[in-house]
Length: 484
Ligand code: NAD
Image 1 (cartoon, helix red, strand yellow):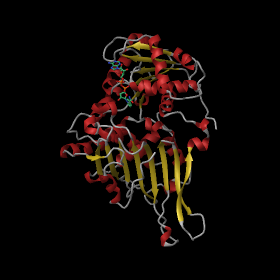
Image 2 (image 1 turned 45 degrees about the vertical axis):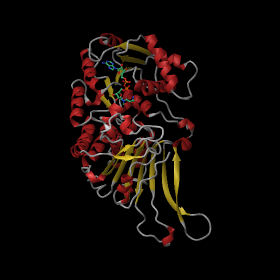
Image 3 (image 1 turned 180 degrees about the vertical axis):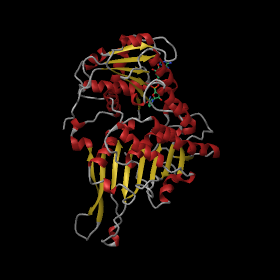
Image 4 (image 1 turned 30 degrees about the vertical axis):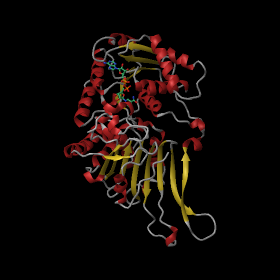
């Protein structure tokens, strides 16, 4: 099956921080792949803007290098496509905090076309960029701005950021990126729930025993030690990515598939979250192994109380979910790199088979990485003679197998950037959602800080601290294996 490419009108995209790590690794390769796919009409322009002094020729060479380094073995590009892509690139040396470069940038803008400004810089510059876009006449109603995480570190800072953007832009011009929402499977989650009759009637506490969300990484904090130590898994992963997944799993069907209708429903989920009880959360820090240092050495802070692992049990107080626990966990240096959501259904109300036929449950697993796809575990008779023995087998729908290699989906950044150009905010977080998520997270973090809670050490390559397993065992449940 060949995916349909719908070209978008020519647009101007300015990447503030166009020489930074995120631009090199994600944004520019994503733009290049959309260019290769034929989605950009003639006349589209991409303008890098950052403090580093460079001219257009140097920037084109810089981008070509990044594409070669980070575009992997991407196929489908004719020879010479990088050269053609370079022709749509230009660069402006500019200081977000001063006036240098801004007139030059303003002079480059084409009036009357969609223009997007990607703020790929630290959040401390968001307000300066918004103000200067306004001062230099680039903040008209066709302008969209894209902002990266972290969107604040608590409710107060998120509110301040929202205000600094709202001074010059309407909410429908602000695209807060959470790249998890751009994943094909995450959107499929909505298609599966709201496009099929099969699941929705079962999607509630009457039939669902519990839901597990796991986002596990094998890497440590890498070169982000200083930043990470001020953040931790709750701020870095739960408040945004896991919370967004939770919302999509738990929300009510919106009346229409419209950005605000979807986001209204997500917001209601966050507002219905119960406060997290201290004994419903386990925090950990990874230990060194023979090769790599542990968390404390990594962040060069032997007294650090920041968690590199978190597991929690959550409840949602509404009619659909009262009584169904949601277990979330995320951590670094775990056994495998995997992200998945598992909806574990209740056992059949009565077992008509013999006692030794075992206890069985349907599990719907939505895999975000690796091998994006969906499995449904169903119970069948084990083949062969010897009576009625039951076994659970997955009905596996790995998308690349089911839909063929040409269905190779655009990666999250490709999809999200094109959504910005098309003006579709469905997969972006609204300001009130972000604030509601912080409003839930803040008291939890404040409680740890007040008590001086020390995270529990765990082995590199494990599934996290034993206490996280116990969190489930206490309820007669168990986590799914963390495996690639
Ligand atoms: P980086 O430090 O590698 O790059 C920062 C960019 O901003 C550079 O191009 C720099 O020249 C520019 N810049 C800095 N100060 C400036 C100023 N005063 N005026 C104009 N330009 C200025 O950072 P990064 O890793 O690319 O991250 C950018 C943003 O994206 C940050 O908010 C980060 O938290 C977020 N983010 C990064 C990643 C990632 O993988 N790197 C992932 C998610 C979110």
